[in-house]
Image 1: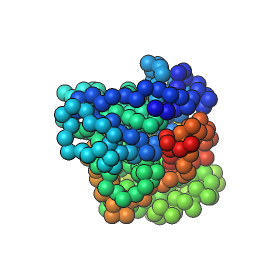
Image 2 (image 1 turned 180 degrees about the horizontal axis):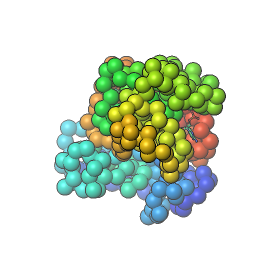
Image 3 (image 1 turned 120 degrees about the horizontal axis):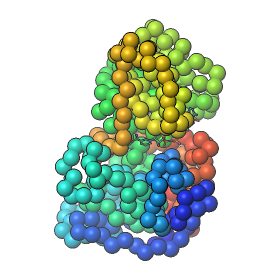
Length: 344
Ligand SMILES: NC(=O)c1ccc[n+]([C@@H]2O[C@H](COP(=O)([O-])OP(=O)(O)OC[C@H]3O[C@@H](n4cnc5c(N)ncnc54)[C@H](OP(=O)(O)O)[C@@H]3O)[C@@H](O)[C@H]2O)c1
């Protein structure tokens, strides 16, 4: 099969479009023909070598896919060849961990493209237990934008942030792949949402997906604007995709007893903040990582009712995976870029 393979860490040019053997499905697993592969910033970090110290090369990145069943491993029932499916963008690899909830706490939890070969390929092999039937009625390209960003957004906003109808929620970087889903999940839960961007075009986009207030942090002060919007109180919950200096601002923007959900580190892994405001206000900082199949199921129900819409930035052939990573690295993406493994 064709795949975007890496044989070493490095710049975008380490992504090579090559022939590699098609995996055969193990017992209990499904071989999925990938119709469209989604991309995430995580894969840019993984390619650089800034997340794990080594892979058994050659390695295939990619957590997200929309596809169809190509072959069934021994013992798999309930799926038909050719049926449209969505593999979970993370699951336990050890059957002993299959009942752990949420799955992201399982010792053997990993992602396609991290602990096993990923979706930047014409085929991927995944456990049937972590394969969802795709009854969204959307194109494969639209569906491929969803799994990781949507499932982890549901976990961060609904389960870890515990966002409820009527809450005021701050989502950092609302035009990003993850942020655009977090805005929509918070709105689907009945919250009011303020989000941040750094240019006006992304601001227009953030409004179009439902943000009630957009703050352009290039020329507006985040904490000041949030305090104006909340009558000086602060938001109930902040979802922070950005880390670095931005996380300190998320802490200042939540109300007394408010919750900050740490989700990403685009602006840096080291965070400094004045502890006084934090404990005087009895605030909470919670981490959110990965998701459970229940999160994606809940998210896809919202997609089917039209409350959450996929955000497809553009479609590129898989042979241009390096270009997709260049655009991600340079913050030139609104939503997600999708790669087509079968395009010429
Ligand atoms: N916890 C989890 O389970 C989980 C799951 C998925 C992703 N993540 C993490 O979440 C983060 C976002 O991932 P993604 O795929 O959504 O990324 P993405 O689509 O590439 O978006 C990242 C956005 O961050 C903003 N940004 C970049 N540098 C910034 C800075 N210095 N200050 C403020 N904003 C900045 C940019 O938005 P503007 O240009 O609009 O400002 C950029 O578009 C990554 O760190 C990723 O690893 C975590």
